[in-house]
Length: 372
Image (tube, rainbow, N blue to C red; front, side):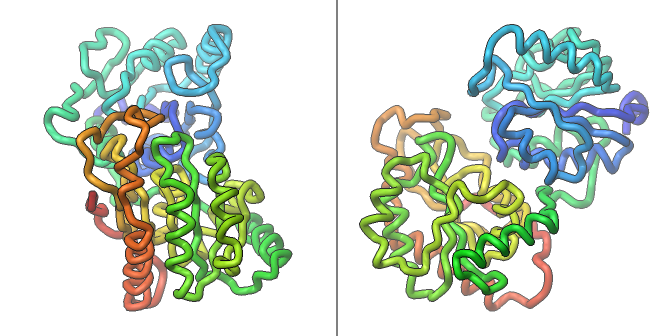
């Protein structure tokens, strides 16, 4: 690494938005760890902090819901307290990870006030003394990179690289054991091979309509595999859609709200396929090498499943890349335009590919192209 960064034994990684965003930074965390950092601390949101036990590259996690992020931030006192906590942590350097639509300047000011001596980030404008190293923001005008590639390029600018660029998620054995106990209680004794489904997303604009998701599962039932519903009841329409179709989906087991994050990882680890929206569980599945059918809302383009077999489904619309949590047009046409039969077809394609693939551990692959 460049001389200054070679001596940074303790590096603070800042990623203040959602769980999936933190996961997509994990290859960059690994690059920092393999290039000289002996300790990594992570400053992240309350939801992102849940990943702490499952990302082995991270040594310390500090939860902080920043006032400039979309969350339930409590107020100025929390921001002042975060400065004191960072000062006590005493990192040698900080890397601020952002999407291109976000500004790193508020987090850079936080680090500056906490006395962090070196700060690296992308910035659209000159940060002056708030950053010691920075890359001028080039997206989206000069093209859009996958979020993982963006963060790898950021740390590579100070010499941090790794040959292993997979997402990081380690499933503890205790979570495998507790999952087996919960599934046994539901009468499930097979060791895996099921289809996992997650119908939820934190943003309503990224949820495939519940009735269409349920119809896709009905269309797929001829495959004969057990289906595990891992979540999605934040959408109130899901319960009614499931109730109407219950007799048509006898193999569906609803585990929503009953699994820890580690148990969800254990369920995915043993799965043949994941069907989901663009959300945190999609990236957990990708980290574990599970094929993903991703109902990918066109709110932003750079968060598709990384290095795992995938089908990315949506309908091209004039209002794409709106970056909104709620569809501004009120129709969610980029998702509702995807026929349930296409979802089932994509699932069968991935299952067929898996059956034809050589047996053995799931291997890392090149970056999955975006099939939008």
